[in-house]
Length: 149
Image (cartoon, rainbow, N blue to C red; front, side, top):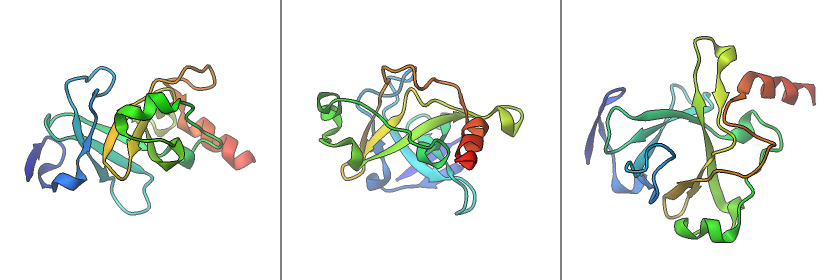
């Protein structure tokens, strides 16, 4: 299957690469199909979350454990039901990154992680009910905290 994207041009993908988000993402409820594209070289912790249906829509994502020690998603089994997942530990977790003009300005939305059932390629964005995380968590600050440990 071919998809036309603004950032990557025409991509050839297979159906099993597509992650389906039945409820879409916050602010993008009608966009439900995405693929994860590694960013640059194999050493980069970042990936792209590219919409299959909206070629202009792509987000930078990262696994939060890479930069935030002890990050955890606390949600109930009932909340995970739409993505056919019983245990959050079996999920692939990403957070959306906002890249500023300077690398030090880069933030991640730790409050609204993307939770993906790896076996079925079904996902959801979960809005956590906690004051421990927020939508603009500075990545560089978290990396400094990790180095100090």
